[in-house]
Amino acid sequence: MKRLKQIFTNQHYIYWLFLFMAILPNIIMFFTESTSLLTRVIQIVLPLGFYGWALTWARKPGKMFWWLFWFMFVDAFQIVLLWLYGESPIAVDMFLNVLTTNPGEATELLSNLLVSVVFVVVLYGSGIVMSIVSLRAKTTLGDKFRRVQRRWSIPMLMAGIVLLTANYFVDKNFKAQDDVFPINGTYNVGLAIQRAYKQSKYEDTSRGFTYNATATRNDSVPEIYVLVIGETSRADNWSLYGYERNTNPGTSALDNLVVYRDAITMSNTTHKSVPTLMSSAGCEAYDSLYHRKGIITAYKEAGYQTVFYSNQQRNHSFIDAFGSEADEVVFLKDKVSLMDLTNTNYDDELIDYVKKRLEQYNGGKLFIVVHMYGSHFNYKDRYPKDDAHFKPDNVISAERVYRKELINAYDNTIINTDKVLSGIIRQVEAKGVNSAVVFTSDHGEDIFDDERGRFLHASPIPTYYQVRVPLLVWTSQKYSINYPDALAQLKAHTNIPVSTNMVVFHTLLDLSGINTPYKKNNLSLCNKEFKQHSRLYINDHNEYLPLDNCGFKQLDIDQFKKHNLQFP
Image 1: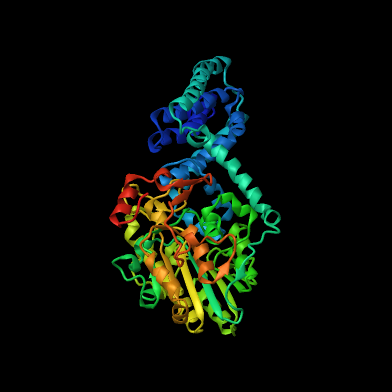
Image 2: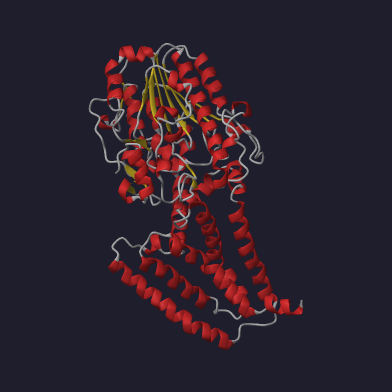
């Protein structure tokens, strides 16, 4: 016991332990990242030299542990991210997801990442303990030991700086803030803070914005239009898109339903995709979101009564701001305590809200936006137990060995989404007026689909499964009779590759006969002026990139080809 105590209170051992903790993610990322060999070498040499040198600044390394605590925190976050996604530095969107994810959803996710979470808690928690031991110990790092460590760490640090500088000449795409950890992680935190601040000022920066929208149809013409936004729903698991299981019994029985075969989202994150679906920012600079309002305002300006129903929790995002523009705003989870993590509001309730609102409808113009909870993990909590069509669906842990159960539960969520969507459409159809319903999902999901073992969404580098989403447009019988040209155009464009975030805003306004300087006819699926546009992806730094430059792997490209989808 005495010998063990001597080991654990030895400042030399503590020094090496802290150095190992600090550099561990860099070692892992040497093997996981797809950057050049020189970049990956820099990612080892530069931080290792810095940490080795920094830990000699004090005679007790425990003191330096706290000076370097930020890096230890980022390291822990990075290891969990690598466990989840297998590659890439901590993204801006990952930090923003922390701010915008409700406690229940976060708890569900963390409970299924226990291995990685326990690992970092044990490793870096032991670092906290050892730092206290170091500070309380009577011993210190000797001057000779510190000199020896500086003899290798300072030259290594200098070599890292030289290689870093040289890499800018060797690799024109190299950026330290993108490619070298923890520089990139720290840089991304700064961007996340900046964006969160800009978001907090949204009310001021968007004040006074107007679409100058006008209705081209007579006010006496009754019209109902609905935008339904699904969550985490990938097209590959919809029978409407060729999936072998019948996951769309409701929508497949509908008349006048137009299915777009080659639709992808421009973002694999909710906090980006939904706002661009609800605005015109999908075809403009992303930062334009901070200065304009959403589609609901355009409808209000055109004389529509507007409604927003969401089965999400408020999270101070653009979604909240855009939804709150409506005349009637309901967040179903407002009635749920933040601490009641087990409470489940099924999307089925959204049908009842739409039904009640339509029972009040006695003519005029009405626009409804419905935001579902959809297929967010944990899948089995997204639908009533009695609606579990595919079993077993009880997922013990989010691991590849349970993929059968995960797929069963996920497919059950698709059936539930189909139930809600077809239920809303039938309620709208029953009113017998000019009406249309547009549905798409914010993004898809990875479910251990290939050798990469990827799971969930919002990864810094997207995959095919995260971006391919369903896009459906339904029109009422009366609308189809009154506006046959619009229906003909909708059907004419079903096989054209589209980005949902670019076309939904413009298609909805065009379907509704609303004019605004912000509407682009060449992005409206119901317009004869529609043209195919290059499909883009919004990366972590809010840059719009072509599909062949956003990180897709050959496995993803193969899936595009397998399903006869255009790439890029």
